Image 1 (cartoon, helix red, strand yellow):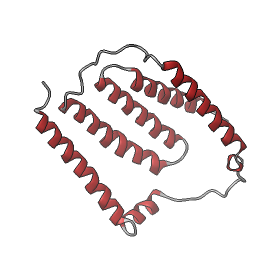
Image 2 (cartoon, rainbow, N blue to C red):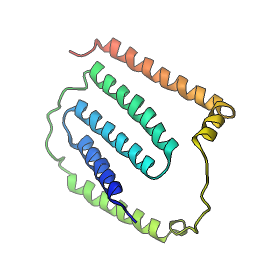
Image 3 (tube, rainbow, N blue to C red):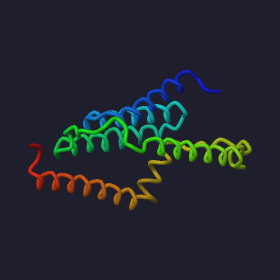
Length: 166
């Protein structure tokens, strides 16, 4: 049963996604993407996936969205390009998108995975996930941290070579 809070979060996510695609100012687009990230984190929290919800909040909202804002502000990405409201072949995009959506919806409804037998609930705590990350999967965690640090340093170097905003 779909509840009221879930519908509100779904509407927030959809409005944020449409705003991110349709806005002309790149800074506003990035902020709309941050709203989508917050909505997804709230949806995860409402569904009972606390670790995924807080990880979404910390990683995507706290790091990726802020990194995108800084990358846009450090480069010349905030300029508004002049463009038409719709491209000349917009109707082909809508037609192909609707056909792909219909095909995927049909395939999902026909799939046996769409009607799985009820599974026993798995009780995994955040403490168990944290223990696994700090013992067995510590190498993957360290490599991810190094990768994110390298991406941030690369963005700063690119911004410095461009001469910054003009």
